[in-house]
Length: 330
Image (cartoon, rainbow, N blue to C red; front, top):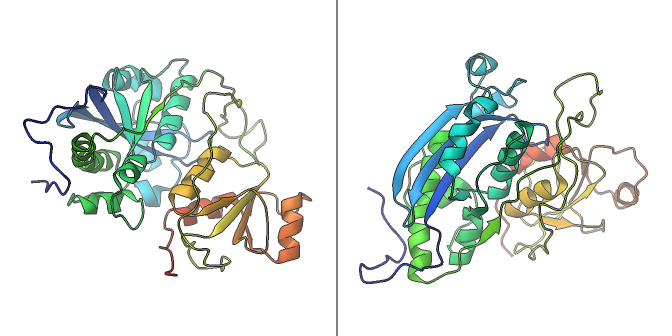
């Protein structure tokens, strides 16, 4: 039985009329984080307007390429070989999403991966709004040391059984979302809903570092479908420069230079949600510069050399983002 550690909505309390009438709690596992990476499994828990589970669904998806970090999601090429293609499950996936608000943990990532798969299939996902549980936990002022899914789950007493398994992650999120939604309703808190604009411009282009004739390609042409926004100030003190062989630490000031295989805004979003300070420039206070071309003559690379700022490529940075150490106390 899930222990509800938030303010309950009493039977006599009316539910906010402006709240959505249904939700689709989604989790997808992928071959990686880049534009041309693919979904390899997906799970959806459908919830009613008060967060009660209606049903759930799970499927493997054949990505038609290497499965990526098997040590994280556990899905091998052999496991995925007989799985359906995304085009085979797109209709069922759509039925699960139709008319509902998509709910996910770091929802921008799940939505972008889903939107790209539908664009490849020359279709659109029937969802127009998304809700990020990280943003909701901030709106509620939950006393969380970080914004990892396991931390949110622990706050509400939800037991995680198989981390990085789409079905279990979706279950955990659904169980943590229900008391969050009820707390928001009890306090008449505005839900942080964002628009989901379908991806309509798509071209098959090689990943950075690949030749056009080799490998699986895929990417999107920049468009205005995702609005820009001012990022909030980092709440953690800067612990100093990154040291090789050690984890990233919340509060570190990170800058990016040059092209990235992952959409730059998505990469920056992930850094911010992990507790890092994303900086547009290099100074003596910069903890780390992330670039795929450390020999380039860009102003950021030149200044990093002058200041002795550590430099790391995108792939290594992505791995370290999975386990950022908590901030040091002031």
